[in-house]
Amino acid sequence: MNERANEHTLNKEQFEQLQTLYVDTLVDSMSKEDLQVYVNDDMIRYCNDLTNRDLIEEIKYTLDETMLEEFVKQIRGNIRG
Image (cartoon, rainbow, N blue to C red):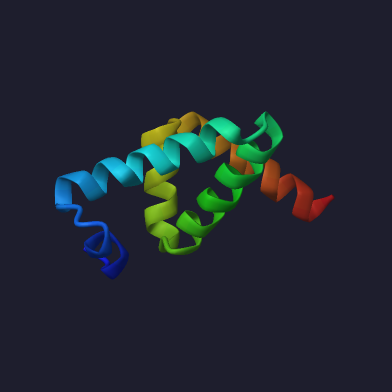
């Protein structure tokens, strides 16, 4: 637990509630466009931390193997074209 939470005498559960309220309020205040930019940036950071193999597995898991194949075809087509 961080020092600020202790200044307000919050226990761990209360600090988690504070965190949830903060995040919910922040997200609710964002426009759709701001939210899309935020999620996009967050996903790029997440994917940057993956190995090539892990990214391929993530795509297969969250989408499917057919979509992965379509992505690869699209990329190879752009390289040649």
